Length: 419
Image (cartoon, rainbow, N blue to C red; front, side, top):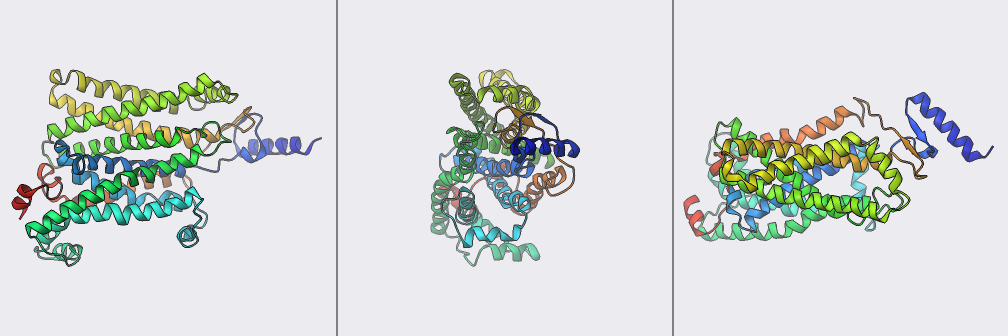
């Protein structure tokens, strides 16, 4: 008997003993998935970072004043999730202590190596600098408090305590310049993840030139949705009324971003069906079979169609919907969009590994609760940024959401008022 047939038979029997289900013709090296749930969490978290920063840039760069109450919240959200962004990759590695090799022995042609440089640039040269310039005057003011908090804010001033109008104006100009630089940096931070999948030509689910663009716009959608949900919850916990204009503005941008993202993903599928390559049959079987609930129900119906209908109603007949009902629609839409984007990441990462390169067989992915690649590890990594964000909110959002979430000096009037 041919050695390959023996290998396939031995692999199928071994997989059956291990409890893995295989349908059709599958090569022996395709019985176990190389990328597990941690690689699903990784692009999801980085997408939230990019989307939250893009929403903050609408205030600083494009002067959308209605979003000012959520400006600082968006920046702190981006920082909290950015701190946790590399953790899924580190936990996925067999030897996470070797991660520094990416920086010490760089390979400029490796997309994965690019993440180390983009991440270091984004967290140090973009996000931390923008937050420091925005908060510097507040750090000087808060450092006068007694106790450990005053000392902490005094350290964060880095010795720069000038609060003159000229210094505050310089802070504002520097913050705006950094934000402008940060917009393409945010696209690069998350777009390269789609570039990695899109450059794998051997996989028809991944090998698509639209993949980086789809990842970028889905990141913008998920980041804005996250800011909407957190803003509503924060005001509810503080027993304060959220800014109606801010929620309406976030809902408007969320609707248009979701509409554009859904159009791109629909165009992707339309192109696949129209081109009718040999792989389209197995992709149809995958979508209608193993990914039915995560793709058609989770991503399309719950994560796209329902939010589009709810957000679209707030744009078309806003005057007929009471503000209390609009708040619930915004919050519910944001939660559904977050789940839909997470389902999209699952469908891309896991779904792209469920069918064989022979296009004649499928395998099944089963994940344990515990272990390095288990549900528990993924859940901890998903909840950790929220814990960090709660600390940031306690330390750096000391005022009410309607006042304390505004950006730094925005002209002479704000500078004189803050001084």
